[in-house]
Structures are given as structure tokens and as C-alpha cells.
Image (cartoon, rainbow, N blue to C red; front, side):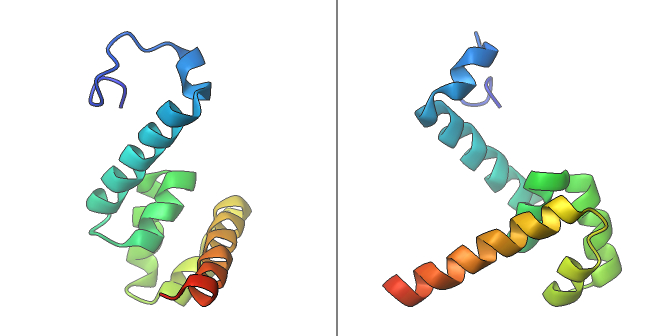
Length: 97
């Protein structure tokens, strides 16, 4: 990611700079979404649990997003996605969709 975004002399300490961290994270999430057929939910799970895991769970669940979240075999990505979706719901209510 560092090389793709013009940081060829990357060191671990720059990841603690908010601007860099946000840029790297957004780049990776965008990559994961593209890799996982444009599905944002799959990308969020992939961001947390790895794109290979997300892809395997998506293949088992098919297009059903509820089933997809239910079959996540790790608790952390399930909680992560539920937290994000809850915040998305509240922001949409506050600011419109």
C-alpha cells in the first residue's frame, strides 16, 4: 500500500499519523471492495478478517447479506460489521441517506 500511494520509504511509525493511516485504510477498503465484486459488506468483513475469509463466507451465503453475517465463523468480524452497520443506520437517520 505504501508503494502504491507514494511512500516508498515507509516505516512502521508513519502509520500512527492520522492522515497516513486514513489514506492507507481507505485505499485497502477500496481494494477489498473491488476484489470482492463491489460488495461493501464483504469488503468490510474482508478488511477485518481478510479478503480470503470474506470470499469463502460470501460463497457459502450467496447474495443474502443477513445469512452472510450469521455464518461468519469468527466473532470479531461479526461484531465489527454490526457496529459499523449500526453507526451507518444512526448517521442515515440523523443526516439522511
